[in-house]
Length: 582
Image 1 (cartoon, one colour):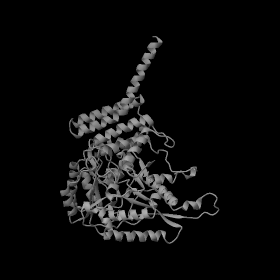
Image 2 (cartoon, rainbow, N blue to C red):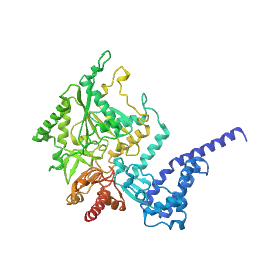
Image 3 (tube, one colour):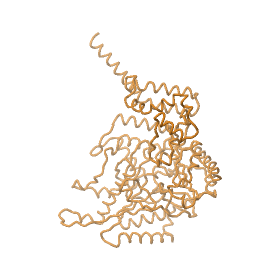
Image 4 (spheres, rainbow, N blue to C red):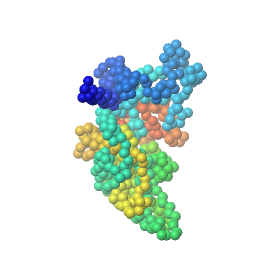
C-alpha cells in the first residue's frame, strides 16, 4: 500500500465521519417532520413511533462513536431507576389505587420514588400528578404525556404563548431551527465590544428600519426584557442630567459634590421586569384606570381628541403630578417616563391604548398617554416605551407606537423579536441619547454589558423572525396595504362571550384575547384560585392556559390562522358556560 493510497483511505474515512456528524446535527429536525406526518395521520401511529425509535437508536453511535450510553444519561438513569423498575413490573403497578395521596406515600416507602420538584409556582397549589409533562413542541402545540402511566402522547395548544414569547407555526419553527444551527456552527459565541459580525449588523439594521423607523439610531443589545429596561433607565437618567446640566455638579475639580435624587414616573399597576432597577420603576398597587369608555376603535386613536375637554383635564392632572415631584426641591427630579404600550377592547369597544399585561390586562386611555408624553417632553424628561410584551405584532402592528401616534426617546424589545426561540433583548435610542454618553473619558461611556450581548445565534434568529412576520408571503395574516394583522378572533363569538352576565370585561387585539370574570373582592387579585377548575376543563380539551387571578386569556402567534383562533374561542365558550353553571 503506497503512501498515496493511505492518504486516499484517510480522506474517505474523514468524509464519512463528517457526513455522520452532519446527519447527527440535523437528525432532530426529522422529528418535526414525523410530528407533521402524525398530526395529519398520513401514516399509522405505530409506524411513526417505530421511526422515532430507530432515529434515537442511531443517535448515540453517530455522535459519540460508541454503543455505550453517555455518562450524564447514566447518572440521570440511575436517579430514575426506582421509578423505571416500578413501572416495568406489571404486578407491582397493580398496587396503584385511585387515592393519589396513598400512591405517593406507597411509592416513597416501598420503592424510594420521591416527589418531583415543581418550579416557577407555589408548590403546595400544584400537586405532582397535575404537572404537565411535555415531550416536545411543534409550532404552537405541546406534545404532552397523557394518563397516569404516561403511556400515550396527546397535543395541547399553548395558549400562554409560553409566557408571551412564542410566534412560530411548525414551518417557521423549522426555519428558525436551521438558522440557529448554522449560526451556532459558524460563530459559536464572540464578544461584541469593538467587534461586529453579520447577524448583529443585519438585526440592528432591521430594527432601525422597522420598530425604530423615524426616530431611533442606536441599538443596544442585552439578553432579556428586564435588563433592556435597566439599560433604558441608565440612558434616560444620563440624558436628563445632561439636559438639565446637573452633571456639572459632578465635574472634576469640585471639592463638594451635591446629592441629587432622580425618580421614575410610571403608571400604577405597570410591570417592567424582576431586576431591582426595573422593580423600582413600577408602583406596588394594582392599576385602577378606565374600565369603560363607549367609543369606537377609530375614535379612540383619533388625534383630534388632543383638543378636547378631556385632554385639558388630563393635562392639568399630569402637570400637577410632575410639579409635585419636582417642584418642591431643586435636588429631586423626575428623570424618566416609562410606559407600556398596547390597545385594549372592552366588550367589543376599544377604550385604551396601554395594557399592563402582568397586572391583569388593564389599560390607560391613549389620549392620557399622549398628553403625558407631550408634557414630559416639554419638561425635557426622556420617554421610555416598554414594548417587551407588546412589540412585534403581538397587538396586530409591528410597534404599538403606531397606535399611539407619538414616538419615544428610548424603547425596549424582546420576546417575539426572536419568535420566542431564544432569549435576546434590545434597547433602541435616539442620537441625542447616544451623544449623552459620547466623550473622551472612558467613564463617561454607558458601562453596561453582558457576556452574551448580541449573541450571534440570537441576532440571526431575530433577523429571520422580523423578516418572516412582516412578509405577506410567509405570514398570510399580514394585510399588505395597511401593514397590520387581519382580525384573528371571531367577532360574533367575542360578542357572545363579552355579553355573558358573568363577564366583567373582554380584551381583544392582535394575537390576544382575554376576559375578566365578575367576582367578589376576595377573588379579584392575582392570588385568586377562582378559575382553577375552568383551566383544568380546558386542558382536557387540549388548551394549556394559566390565569392572571380572575383574568383568563388566550394568546396565539402572528401567523396563527383565524380558524384555529375560532376553535379556541368555541372551546372556551362551551367550557365557560359549564363552569358558570357550577
